[in-house]
Length: 99
Image 1 (spheres, rainbow, N blue to C red):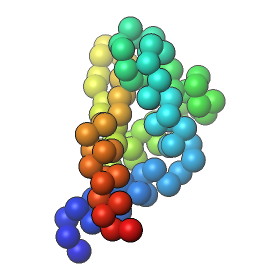
Image 2 (tube, rainbow, N blue to C red):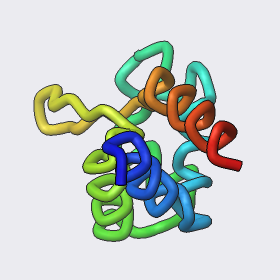
Image 3 (cartoon, one colour):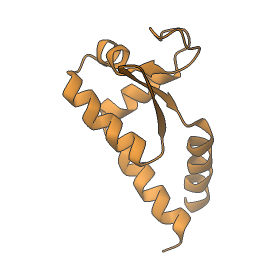
Image 4 (tube, rainbow, N blue to C red):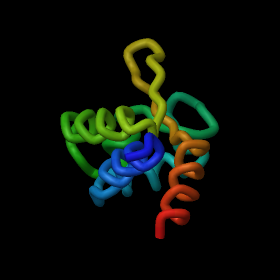
């Protein structure tokens, strides 16, 4: 299996869960970050928007981060997450090419 196809499988697994798709939609919103970032959210912001508990947010973010769909950065006591738009676009092109 080519490397891109394997990466596409990991990407599809990461976005297969409805909660993770809701998280990705929340991360797409502009101006909602409590850390005054233009894009992205901290875990607490995601928890409030998606209405799931903090351990659940951590679980889903770990899967999204491992797949490369989101990027995380530690700022003080917070982890700030944003979408990896470049990878998302690349995976969408890869999916379109396989269907």
